[in-house]
Amino acid sequence: MESVEITAGSVKEALEQGLRQLGVAEEDCEYEVVKESGFIKKKYTVKVTEKPKGEKAALEFIRGVIKRMELDCEVELKVTEDGFLYEISGADVAHIIGYRGDVLDSLQYLALLVANTVEGFDGRIIVDGENYREKRVQILTKLARRLAFKAAKTGEEIKLEPMNPFERRVIHSALSDDKFVSTHSEGEEPYRYVVIVPDKHPKRERRGRDNRERRERPQPVVSESNIKYHTDIDMYDAETSRNFKKKGFGKTKSYGVSKRRF
Image (cartoon, rainbow, N blue to C red; front, side, top):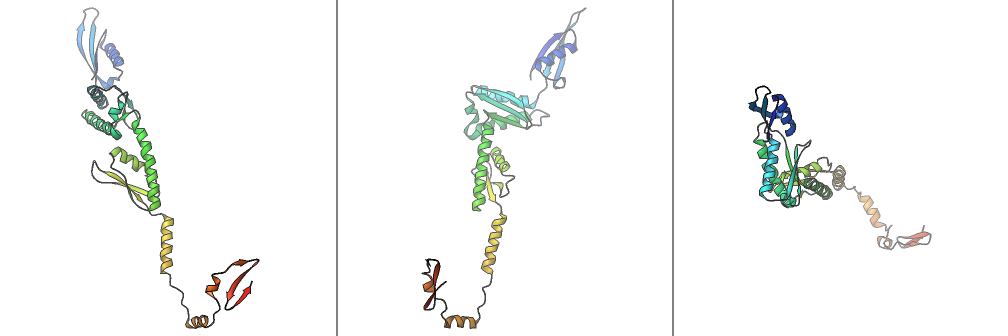
């Protein structure tokens, strides 16, 4: 918590100067008069202290971790629609990111715990390094769409490798509006993974139903008289018809022992 001591001709004037110096609003600070001097022209010394905030506590924690690790990095706090973003930059930022962001995720988790120790904190904390998370989102989104196409084409489930909660959310979000696949997670942490399941395609389902109906369709019944007629009279020589060729403007076809041009 930051605090300053300001001496002025009145408590109000000292408080206003302290608020400007800290860069906060009056409702976010506490103040007390620590000294009063002068007989004719009085002076007041006021101590203005910023109230503890979860996001500020998390910021100091992250800075402390970087300092103890002796890394050449800086942290900047930004307020976004999703919550509080802590952007880390510098020459040693790769050590903060770690393998696939594992160090970054651990630092984010610990920063959230620190922020929650402050009463009244209710927000989301995101720790990022050199825009790593946005780049990771783009890579995972492309991967999800490519595997979704494969699952829909083959009709088989696809199990991805184990991922952390952030990466699993990216996969689920990327395929949430897909009409041909659905996703769910299986397994236990830290080996929990995403499964891409192909949905039934209307055309594929209709094609399968048509094939089943075709197989189940009864064969036409041939009468005994029809069988006898075609057996006794050799109207069509199948062996000769295999040698059926195009000759000139007509075609030659065999009917019994004679040939006709038509």
